[in-house]
Image (tube, rainbow, N blue to C red; front, side, top):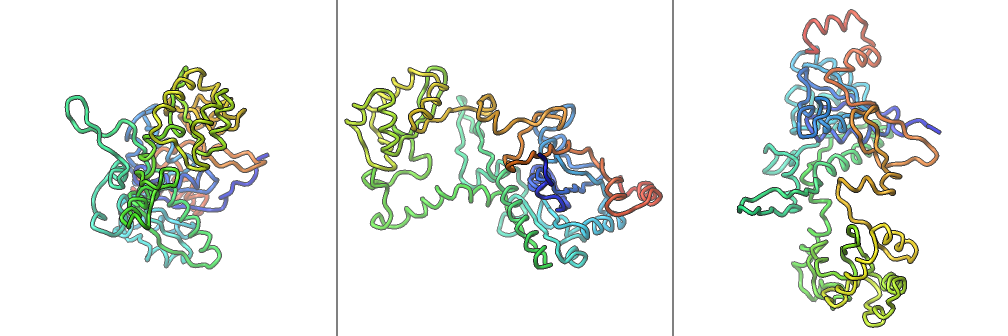
Length: 410
């Protein structure tokens, strides 16, 4: 059964450049009307990164799926006037580019609020609208290096390299947090009749999502009498986050007969289940460990035992064992192999090439009992200009033709 989309009736006017436009994709995926207003030459996201699919980047096909494109020359008075008319009928404006870009065109928050007091104006940028870095140009990798998420690699020739496997946190989490905040702003504006202006930085988002490590190091600045390690480690302070997992044994990656699995028996009950399940209760009797958070840190003898045990089954057999014996074991994949997993296929079936121009992952939100509609394919530059002006603003054919002849659409 298909229901009314969750965000049906919500309208976003998006002015974006490159990846930050993802902030509005969460809205279009859930049925909001997202109108991307771009210059006549278009957002060059269509040519950025790889792969290029039938002449268009995957970055564009994913980021702007489900949206409409209106091409306007905002340096013309007619272009500005049309933009303001669109804003008058919208819930929010997204400025996903350098802060102040719209203000320079006379379309900043103060001006737009006069037209629509309920408008929520959200700026998503690299380093934010304040601070010493606010005017610096940047790309997505910078936010993760700034936040301390990346360790540079050195190749065999001694050159410093960007790591092959990047988490890409800032450029993805920034838009996600922005969408959350934007929806909160819209919710309040609809209740109070008063909009607001908000801004966030992708660099801030990258740091925020690594709060556990950052806050741990900050806590370790205090006295060891006040801040200790876990009792299972004899209160020794371990490095924060996953760095502290290096010497783990009961919580570690092991090689299976055909790949790798992650073993996570840090609770005593799970550890006991595992030992009984593999017929090695002697391991539990010798190393029962603590009740919680015990990784058997540095126990090389036990690690040799587990290494031999895990080599005895395939990854799929260990996954079945995990369910049968109630002990946590997970498969270890990469971005190429993960989609072949049955759980992945069930939860994240790709949208088709026919629908969106490339196989794309869906928004991982499921409305129980309802079928989520497939978003439309990312638009070409100005693809929906005349449609939006006619349907939303009520422009007749003659007026649209005159605007086109005057170069307002490029």
